[in-house]
Amino acid sequence: MPIIDPFERHTDRYDQWFEANDLAFESELAAVRSLLPDGEAVEIGVGSGQFAAPLDVELGVDPSPAMLARARDRGVVPVRGVAEAMPLRSESVDAALMVTTICFVDDLDAALAEARRVLRPGGRLVIGFVDRDSPLGETYQETQDSNPFYRDATFRGVAELREALADAGFGELSAVQTLFADPTALEDPEPVESGWGNGSFVVLAATPD
Image 1 (cartoon, rainbow, N blue to C red):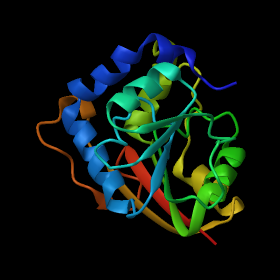
Image 2: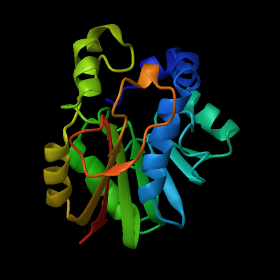
Image 3: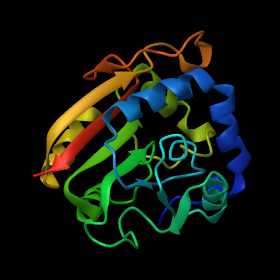
């Protein structure tokens, strides 16, 4: 079953994180933007549209009506559905975006297969996530039981996602990273660097083979 209840009950709290941590959010946006191609796009697990709106992503899929209402207010076309079974046509978008969503999917392999299905030939899947093995990822895991959003999350590492992407038929992997310091104590936006292993927020981009 998709994780909906905390996003329905704590919609304001979800949005307030971005306001309180605006420099971290700006850093994450820059990292995602650096690998997001031009063209029609969908954000899978769009939430309240915090990423989709500034990135000009037209469509947003999410199982939470409350989140979709916020996304619609931000100019995103809302589509109710889950990552493993999206109500979208095959080969209908140039980019599929998943930001801080991969830890909430019920079936990782099915979600990646669905993303591949909706991508046009030459399209790109872009996944932004907090690396399980990073300092921030370790903190989230340590405090998981007290966080209504992450209580039932399954955090992922880069190696796991690279293997899953390859198994799903994706290749041409690119990666960038950011958030090298405590995101709650930043005085400036963090840089975006290639690769992974140092930054807590990682973006992977892959094209179907």
